[in-house]
Figure 1 (cartoon, rainbow, N blue to C red):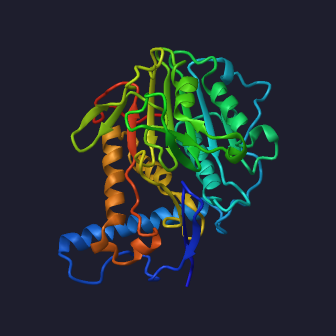
Figure 2: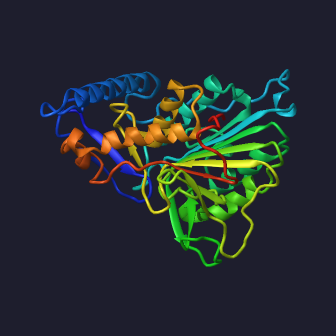
Amino acid sequence: MEKTATSKRCNTQYSLKKPESKCKCFVPTGGQSGDNQERHHRFSQFVRNFAERFKNKLSSSGESTNVSSMNVKPSGESTNAETHPRKRALLCGVTYKNKKYKLKGTVNDVRYMRDFLMNKYRYPAECIRVLTEDEKEDIFSPTKKNIQESLKWLVEGSESGDSLVFYFSGHGLRQPDFNDDERDGFDETICPVDFMQEGMILDNEINSTIVWPLKKGVTLHAIVDACHSGTILDLEYIYKPETNDWEDNSAPSKARKSTSGGIAICLSACDDDKMAADTTAFTGKAMAGAMTYLMIETIKKDAEITYGHLLERMREMVEQFNDKSCLGKFLPTFFYHRKIQNALLSSSEMFDVYTKKFLL
């Protein structure tokens, strides 16, 4: 029986579990109405197609084996970095190699995100900076210093019309807030590869580094596939799908969280008090972040999708996976009795999520 693995992106637990069934269909064998059977059949077919595409793109061993650099140096003829409007992206995937809290899917996440940005949104390869432990040059290792410097690089010189992307796949944690600038009393953090020695990077620092400098006309998207990542950019508004409304997330202390006229939008894997996971649910053997793949696949199926419909369809997928009546006993064992979490949307300004198209 093929082993299936899941590891949580917030603590040091990692394990391997055998699935209770070899069935890849995830469809109960009886007791369903015709409508339910058809719905489950369509969903199961989607999952099978989804997995097949990922198997062609990702390492079949579950570990990242492609050690060629994902960083491309600008050629002598390239002028994209100096012209506007421009596209620029920073992609960080931290595996924490040889640690008890290692993750296996983060480099796969980065590779897939890079391909997605280049093929779907035409980001030039030389304008995408990748930080992973597979990169041979020290400047591209996801250390605290390199991530901090790269965040500055991301927004440096940005002008109206520019599109920027910050992507992080790795561990996320939270710690008590002593400055009264968090409504829930906690600062959210991302964990560089050397966080045990150098410390974590707090949401306050990320906000001041890549949100404050955004000029009018500049758009920043952050996509963070990590535990406790809900308000990792410390943006002023949180979207609530239940009420189709925005919730105030400004600092009680009145500390600044705003841009300089631009807009920052963040899609996080889960709420601040929830956990994300690495999983082989979609890929068979290769580990991957659930939120990253659900997001990309949903957008690929609808080029004109809005933020609201993107969230809706991702939530539908999550509900399908978490539906015990559909999945029986397999999923709770598979995910350590934890459900896949819904993504969270936050922004520096309120907007109509059902009219604004998702564009990177």
